[in-house]
Image (cartoon, rainbow, N blue to C red; front, side, top):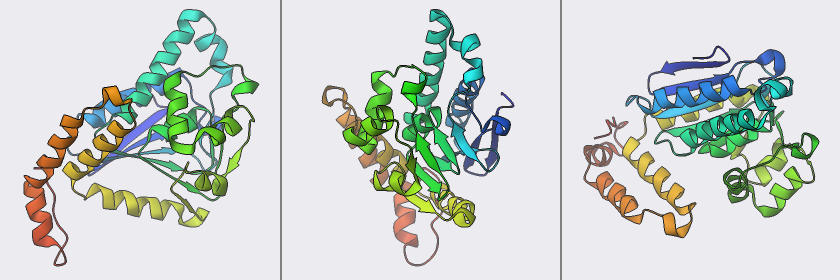
Length: 260
C-alpha cells in the first residue's frame, strides 16, 4: 500500500486517508492505485461494514490533482489512458461497494476530491470546507460516467456552474445543492463523524446492502436495472436472523446484528 494512502481498521470501520498534507492531499496516480487496492481489501473483509474517506492534515480532503506530476503521469496518450482507467477503476470500486462509504470532508475538496466524494454514499463537511472543479483552467476532459454522477447528485445547472462557470461552492452552497448532507462547525466535525459512522457500523448490514443496491439500481439506465436482485435483497432482509433480532430488541436494548 502506498504511504500516500493510509488505511486502518477499527472494528467494523475501515479508514482510507489521503496522506499528502504538504500538497493538501493533491491526488496522483499512486494515490488512485492505493485507493483502489484499499477498497478491494475492505470489500473482501466481512467484518467491515462502513468505509470512511478523509484527508490528512487540517486543510484539505483532496485539493485537486497533483499537477506537478502531469507531464510524467498524463503526458502521452497511453499514460493518460492508464491514469484515467486507474482513476475510474478506483471510483467504481467505491461506487459499487457493498459497504457504506462516507466522505468526511474537512477543508478543500477540489477536482479529484469532488469525484471521490460523489461516489460515496454519504458526504459530510466542516464549515470551512469548499468545493470546486477547475477543469477549464487545466484543459482536462471528463467521461460520461463522471459527469452523470455529478448531475445525478447536484443537478444539471449547478454542475454547469461548477464545471463551466468555475464557481467555488462554500459549505453552505454545497449543502443547498445537495453535494453534502450536513455541515458541521469545525470543532464539532470529527466527533459528529465518529458518532454517525459508529452508528452505521452497528446497523443491520443486510438492510444497508439492500438500500445501497436498490438506490444504485435506480441511478442506472432503465435497461440495465437488475430488479430481480433488488427483490431478492428485500426478501433476504425479512428472512434473516438480523430481522428477528431487530424486532426482539426494538425499544428494549441495542440489537446485535451479524449479517445473517
